Length: 137
Ligand code: ATP
Ligand code: MG
Image 1 (cartoon, rainbow, N blue to C red):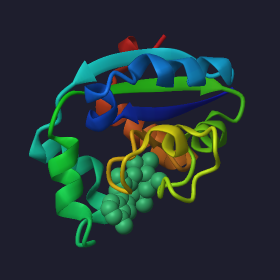
Image 2 (image 1 turned 120 degrees about the vertical axis):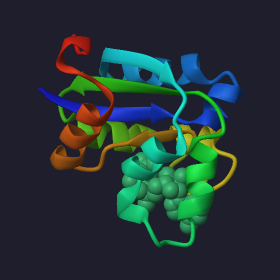
Image 3 (image 1 turned 90 degrees about the vertical axis):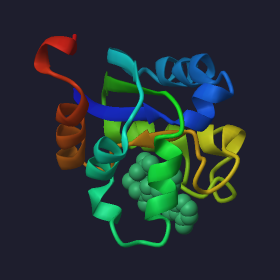
């Protein structure tokens, strides 16, 4: 089985969508094996999104991601990385398949409710960025 890293972003936390999103993970057979609510500071957010440094959407993204609490989780299941990306839908909610989290809940390209790792390498790095081994069950 595979594990992946997921964030419920500040827009979704503010709009009381945590339960609806967890429902979708669990219904798809993705098991929550680590969970916490945190607030990112600028440095922690900048480190997480370092790959996007210099892109036009980078600074507003950091401001958005530090604008309120987020929920971070590790999801475990068969093909968890691809399955989670599928449930999330495309980055641009207007292009996302109906029934995906972003199609149903996102309010803009930036405020798109969720993050999910895009490869085995990024999943490992992102999990380690937020969780210690004893926090993962
Ligand atoms: P994530 O990494 O959050 O799972 P993603 O892999 O679908 O999303 P990325 O290209 O990695 O998308 O972009 C990271 C995040 O930056 C997006 O989820 C979105 O919040 C924001 N973002 C990306 N492109 C744009 C854009 N053109 N305009 C505004 N915000 C954007
Ligand atoms: Mg990404």
